[in-house]
Image 1 (tube, helix red, strand yellow):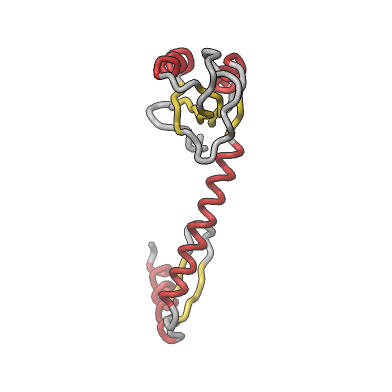
Image 2 (cartoon, rainbow, N blue to C red):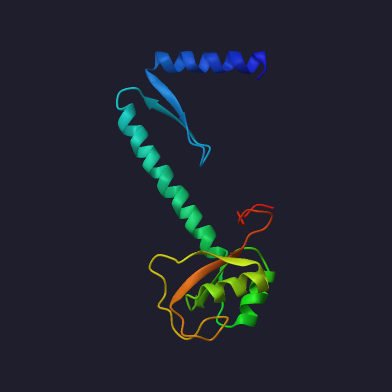
Amino acid sequence: MGNARRAAAARDRAQDIEKSQVLLARRDTREKLGVPIDGLAARVVELLNDIQRTLLERAVAFRDEHTQQADTYDAFKQMLEGRPGFVLAPWCGSAACEAQIKTDTQATIRNIPMNPPKAEGSCVRCDSPAEFVVRFEIVLVGRPFQGRP
């Protein structure tokens, strides 16, 4: 930080002290807010709750936009070769079946979603009755897809 920027920041802090306020900066929106010292604790709690809600909504929307659903093994494999993200598919619950899917596609089960759709029909790979609908993903270079190039 250059000397001019340091001087400007010091002036801003002095003005905030004169106004009995602090400057809060949200990293999720880049918004800066002058908040009175009186009531600061309650305002910080309110802002943190809002930030948490905003981040969760953004993450869920991103996940949903990057999730596809497959009912056949050919479609499942094709989806995994396409754009990065998740594939929801019915699965029989067999460890051997899961291992074969990993061998064939490099995809692993990331999770069994909370409140998943009812598992109907057969497993995407072996045609046994499906017990779960699970989220599969291919992990590239030792880490899951994070939506960044």
